[in-house]
Image 1 (cartoon, rainbow, N blue to C red):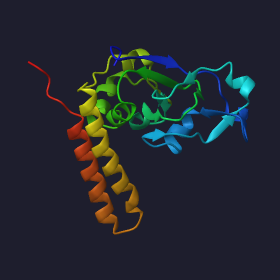
Image 2 (image 1 turned 135 degrees about the vertical axis):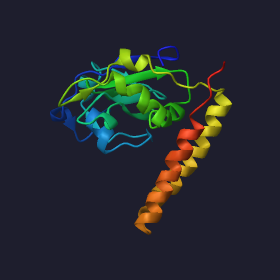
Image 3 (image 1 turned 180 degrees about the horizontal axis):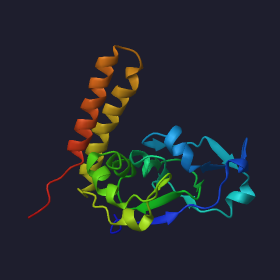
Image 4 (image 1 turned 180 degrees about the vertical axis):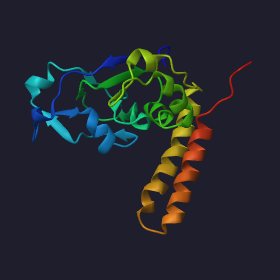
Length: 193
């Protein structure tokens, strides 16, 4: 991943800095609890004078939570697609890259990514991953047209699984497993010999 982008550490935002209105910000904890694959608006805001001093994600960047209490949630990512830059908290990295942002965010959800990240996760009670470690992870890079095709398919699956809030629990679980299977298949490529 280090060949297609750069990892930048977020900067100091505490929950006590949140205000009702102001400059948008993404706190690493909200990546775990509030955001999905992508976002165009923020849940929280900080004062504009504080935001001016903070590192910001630009449109198309990924914002990645780099700490969690469990390995599966370490490096959960959201593609920032909003119109304005957003401030990013310390326990998060910004991945500035040249790929389709949703494609990269979907890749972070795959078993292929999870398997590569596992040896790089450190810590005991609080689990962490560094930007240097994430830079070593291999991401398949098809043409931009192919990335867009994959994103369109996964967005449709995402819509379908999101609309499953009602229904039989077994059917909902089966559709989510099916979605995960197809996501992993679409984002796994054979390496050239």
